[in-house]
Length: 94
Image (cartoon, rainbow, N blue to C red; front, side, top):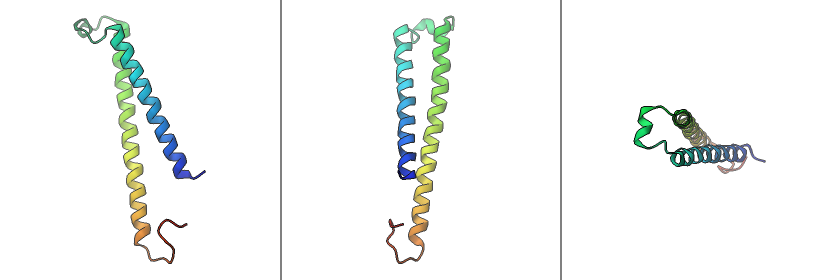
């Protein structure tokens, strides 16, 4: 299999997994009642856990977005560099 396709599949599966975990934890915390006025008093351990999980998943989301943007930028730059070199081959031939 092509390495670019493997990278794309890995990136999509990571986004799906983290997105699913984030959605599931948000639904659980909402069902448990952590988003009520009592939540601001920070007296419930499960609601504190919800805060921590939300924080860490947000950080992981941001790193995934930064990695995806870096990967796309790198591929675009290498494609432009490949297109600017003189060659007898077409652009997408190896």
